Image (tube, rainbow, N blue to C red):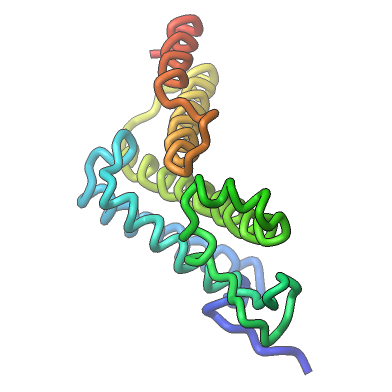
Length: 202
């Protein structure tokens, strides 16, 4: 007997039974993304350029909620050995509760624990970055609705460059907030400005 799918934890819970149905479901998903993007844009008109800390915190909390749903916490014994009924539940909140300094110290104090926590933190960081990029894409698409386009292929490449550079800024800001010393927002901004000038990108 196949195990029933749980909508809360299984991203594949939507039943698709034909290409017609796939198109219909895809259209619904796109419309939902547009509706969400409209809310974001109404509440934060400068979302693509500058997200206030309080809104960023809410976004992170929402991404964390969904990530935890599809990645149930694992239990470990006091020796950090996987155990179904272990006394230590490694939730996302638990892993993020460590400051960057405390997390760094843990690498020497308890490398096994550090490795387990690092796996969760890295996985969530990638998930959050990807989902934020998806949201930004939806907002950008909404902002461009109704605009007539006479762009050439070269202009389309310029748009790709703009999107890539925006993503670099976002990821640098996120990494910097995590305490990654290699993520220098000022240096990146200077480098991007220099690149745009050299490439003649408006």
